Image 1 (spheres, protein in one colour):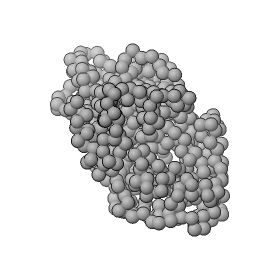
Image 2 (cartoon, helix red, strand yellow):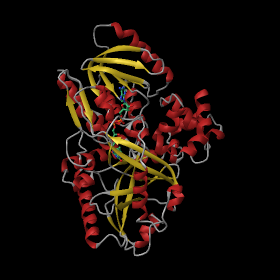
Image 3 (cartoon, rainbow, N blue to C red):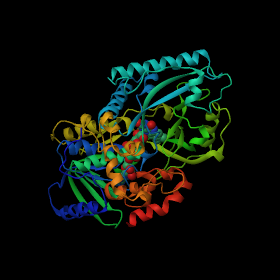
Image 4 (cartoon, rainbow, N blue to C red):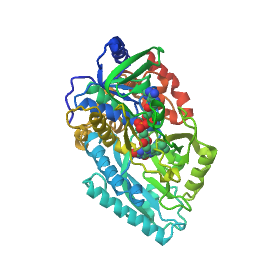
Length: 517
Ligand SMILES: Cc1cc2nc3c(=O)[nH]c(=O)nc-3n(C[C@H](O)[C@H](O)[C@H](O)COP(=O)(O)OP(=O)(O)OC[C@H]3O[C@@H](n4cnc5c(N)ncnc54)[C@H](O)[C@@H]3O)c2cc1C
């Protein structure tokens, strides 16, 4: 299934320096130096870079901080079929989501997405009509999956669960009055920031120049100023086409874009607080219809609990902060389903992200459409915002088609629907990769290359610190092949150790050692 490339998928400081130097040198030329300049290295920008490079265009992706620095790393890490959109009547978005979920799970990233059972426990608070509504929703989700041609071997059909089954999946659910439950299956990413890195590396394997710590200013339809954030040096870059994929910062890159950011917060717990839960737990928010709090099993024996939807006006911070009220709300809702309540002492980390929603002037941010928007400025600059991780590929395809049209250019047809990301292979092949399952779920077929980083030294394959299973071999691999330039890249994006500050502090020394190697 792997494609042969003439470029390497490896990103590292040496490649970045080489590519930046060549671009700086070409800065004086009057003609465009590249076909497409992509602004922003989140899931959307990485997707656009891959779409363009795999259509045969030359590409520069400029990211101010690091791959996956923005909203893309603060998501719930679900590849979802759009059940929620269906409930609000947005059939088109729901179908698009379900199709893209299938593309990721079956072709482009089977190694990074697994089928996750998600259960709704039928507690005394969930009346018969509430249960019937959830069941109807799940059946609609099955229909959506079938319409998207995703087989039940990839995502099993929804069904009713006995009381014992619910407690097997989620041992800490309140058993008093529990009538059983309902289960449906959706996709779950190993990690969102790792998906972004995989897309960007695949783009690099098709020749895209992926430049982190490189910010864009003065963007127009045919170029921008690039600044190397490590040296402070700036130079102009002429491009035949420019795509603004700066997410919640898109309005700072170009004029005429007004966003209405909405903050979503998650809490991080240890798995032991949930008794080793193996399914996602879906808990209805009291007093709301069709809104839930989710508890999701996560790598490194953690559980993420989210999420909120709060209007977040004002200047956009680099790293959004959850409020106390959000933390309390999540704990309160979670505890309606648990036998013994969890408290703030059980929380080992919190994180928040800003949804890049377009300002449509409608009521609550929770009601603003999650459909992506592609906006073309009079000078041909195209901005792509909104949407979600699940639909990044479709967003990228739409953005590239728009920028080609706006600039009167052509390229080969879009190929990304069947283009595997680095490390991807079908499930049968993945099951034979000679590496621990944990590594296969993070690196796919490249897991053997990660093992090779250890050079036969077993110490490099042991966890680097308490609270994480990450090994030194992975950190080395991230520096040599995944574009990690500093300790934060390693701890907060290539691995997610940083989601629990105590574990991050314990792992910092190892990260510094990996960079010094
Ligand atoms: C709490 C929450 C939960 C979510 N959960 C899910 C989920 O489970 N499943 C799902 O499918 N979707 C989910 N989403 C939606 C999804 O996360 C976002 O739609 C998506 O990540 C947006 O990606 P992006 O690339 O457009 O933006 P970003 O990831 O924010 O990327 C923009 C990038 O642009 C860079 N940048 C900014 N300015 C400049 C500049 N001047 N020059 C260069 N670079 C610049 C930034 O550093 C950033 O890296 C969730 C969103 C939130 C907030």
